[in-house]
Image 1 (tube, helix red, strand yellow):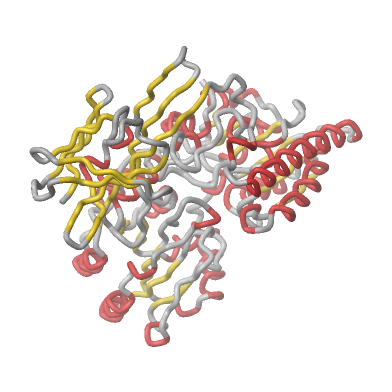
Image 2: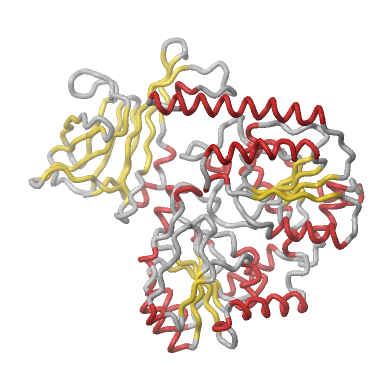
Length: 535
């Protein structure tokens, strides 16, 4: 039995099923275990949310629809087609001079062990907020312990703001200080590394500083100590470059003389981030977000500005569509040969072999909970294929994922973990086939004009629950739902390469962009010659 359709008729919530076997269904509150029953008539139920059995509103909580069977209650799955429509079913009922609201949100449950999709009906009572920019500990935490923790965080953030203002007051600026920093990656890499190297090569008279740590992978006290040190470093800076979300800028407002530039670590992929996820779990605060603080955002090209406007919630004039710094000279033969030597020195077993690089994105709600279900990889099957076709299967996991893949000794001659290698773009030089999913690594790899396989065992679940800018239905390569189809695609050399070639042509019409020079000239040296880029 599955839910095939959900729709509203004023205060009535109608739910349709694909079977008429059940005579009634049970609504159960997953938080309180409160439950009630509703009769099924002609494969549907009609629930008055203001008058459920017992003459009451549907209480606040998370409600799941259950099938009544002889063996007890069983959750009812929802069809993929209807799951894609759930986010359009949310209802807001205002009452008493619009001072209060009753909200019904049709959401999808996280169910890692079950590949079926299940919906949950979330109900909330809310009141008007006349100061939406303020954080409230009483609202953001339910337990006393949580409220005390939230109050401490609020105090710590206020302390950091005061500390930063004090640091600015006692620090003289000379216009010659540049900071490269990240709260998610260590050490410096990618766009930041390329930009830093170019500043050095041009022998510009600037003093560069570096501050890298992983805020979500350490205790909150340690992070606070890092931020206390960081505010004094920031007070000296004239230019700050970041490559990912940096929480410190959610807390403090930089001095107007300091310019903050985001050189986002990703090119373009499928998964939505930032404000593109607004309304979903983990989405940024409407007003308190570091994303709104950037003076400049570097993107790969004009076509990507609308995408990242959505992500960062910024006006178009903040964007520099100059290309990605790390792609300057990316296909330079000298750089390619140097990188290959370094890779083969670290992984000699890859030399003189064709390489399949497996580099998916993570699963989970964020950095702290990131994981990948390794059971979805058939190591025996890929080992046999590598033996047959003389390939090496190299695994490069997302940096958020702490648990590494376990490779049995009998497969070690053909399967290797290369996660330790810092720069995935250099690994692309020795890669013959890339297997990924929703990752943005396709952007750089497409320059290689080599095959891409998109292995997304959870294609619909991921796209619906996480949210994407675009679906894998238009992916620039072969899309596989089952791992056996990945194996067959490689065996048959069925890669749909024409899609990859078109993607590369559309995104890289000008490969020699000199992105670093354009960023340096516009952001640091204020060279107005590049202003045409912003028109």
